[in-house]
Image (cartoon, rainbow, N blue to C red; front, side):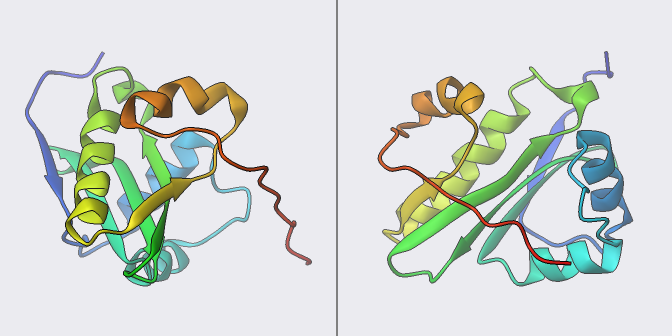
Length: 137
């Protein structure tokens, strides 16, 4: 269990995205074998990103892909496995939703059925069948 130092949330991009690479690896999210440089491009091209730190260690993140007018898709919400169940994901989600609310953007997300119960307290409800297409190559 990590020490209980204060968690700092920020929407300022890090100077070095190696910490995000380490986080994605820890979460098992890097099946596409993205580099730290590609993860940086992903974040910088998102409408809004929130990062969670304990001291100088990046321990969580979430982002919104949006047109900034109608809808915003919340994605990449994750917390380092060593820091899960400490309400850090809740802190990230609250900040992402506040951004959507401030701009009157409809927040949407896609998740596996096993995560539906996690997102329901934030006001999310199943509304459609989602589909995805694996990228070629």
